Length: 65
Ligand SMILES: [Cu+2]
Image (cartoon, rainbow, N blue to C red; front, side, top):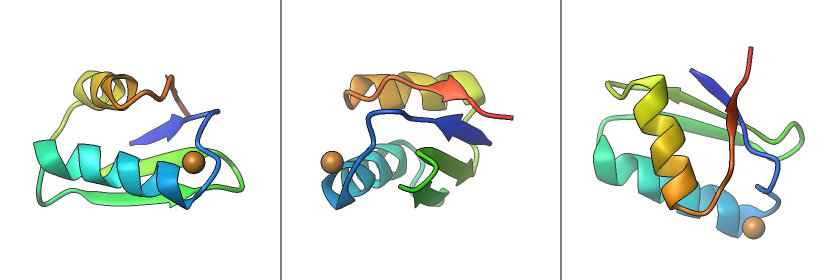
């Protein structure tokens, strides 16, 4: 699953995002791309759950194609 996260702009953001997702799904595979402001996640969480987790961490987001 892929999300566009416009406010993700540095290493602090990516580690906060990875930490937040892994707190909910320890086995999740998370890949943050600062260049395209996208987060790719493979794991057991639904797109809705992931969107909520990102928002709770302070990052507005939308599903990316
Ligand atoms: Cu940052």
